[in-house]
Length: 168
Length: 327
Image 1 (tube, rainbow over the protein chains, first blue to last red):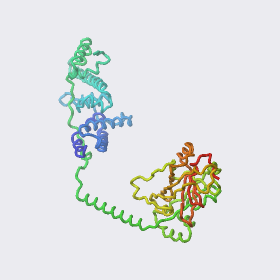
Image 2 (cartoon, one colour):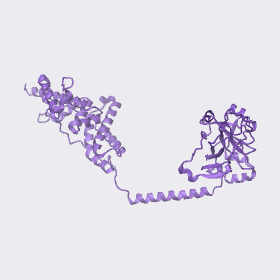
Image 3 (cartoon, rainbow over the protein chains, first blue to last red):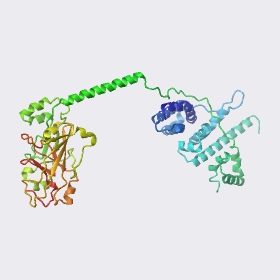
Image 4 (cartoon, each protein chain N blue to C red):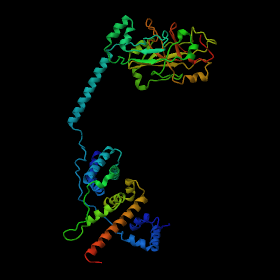
């Protein structure tokens, strides 16, 4: 990968990686640091990385950097995280986005990463397996369970919402 | 294909995405027919999708790298650097050519010493052992940084008692263990690689000069010894070994000698005696003959070689079978 191609990857993938990391860590500064680390490593190894596979390689680095961060910071709970409480909007409707955010936080770290990689970033099961160091079958099972969990979460909140409006 | 409750999760997503083969799809349908409660859970996931949010953005200027081609200024600077290096190299070469050879020597006569110790001294110490005529020459070279010996090193010698019994007292030299030299394993070995060949100078019968041309690798040709003259062998005189080449490498004031032997050794040499030479041998100092300057000024030879002062010849005693003693 040339320097020019590296800069193309920055343009194309920096925001996506940042989104993936901030959704997982829920901390902007940490996500920024992890993005920086990931691109540093990509730059160092640019001669070994093919341009076509650079995106997958970048997310692999980012995912592993995030795992390292989790391991080093077991006191994760003590950090101030972005508020994810569902707040009614002025119109009285719950923001779908906030629901989704809260639902994602209900998932385990691994499930959350897989959902984001598959449904946000559009990676194939095989690519997700390479990024997360899982087999393709494991990826499918984790993803299925994660989606089921999200569905149950949305359903339960929807039902509670209906009850609050007097619907049964 | 057998799909059951323990493995159906692997296939659900592919089933919903219609990525299964016909057989697999049929098997899944059959499974869901048997377990409608599972199908109730699964069917709502058919249209599952998440829309990625576009609001996340990061400053990319810190992440990007410069890809500009090298400018005229950089080229100019590179050219200036190259010219400077070239100039410095030429100057250095000129300085080296103007330097006269230096002389180093082992100041201690091994045969006189009972303390089994050889000391290699610095330039200053060495000069004290050089005759006045040479001393002036050596002093003039004192400022030559290339030929300066940096440190003093004492190394204890371990004599080989077995060797003492075989070699006469006049030839019994102390051994010096652990020096840089490597034994040549009874082979004529080219230790100079091709790249260094140009720097090699062959000096006949004047190892002094060889030693002075530091830090080059130098080959010193010694006269062939057809037989070990003056040494009485208890058996036949055919058991001699020729020593035809000694290679000297001087680096940072330390001499590294390698001795090549002619493989046309006597018939009496056994495998066992040859194998001895495959080990790294101890080394021994050989006496300097300052006046004649004929042979070895300073050398550190494997213990399997001895130097006869009177004959000014080198012989490889340990190549001889044990059954042949040397008186």
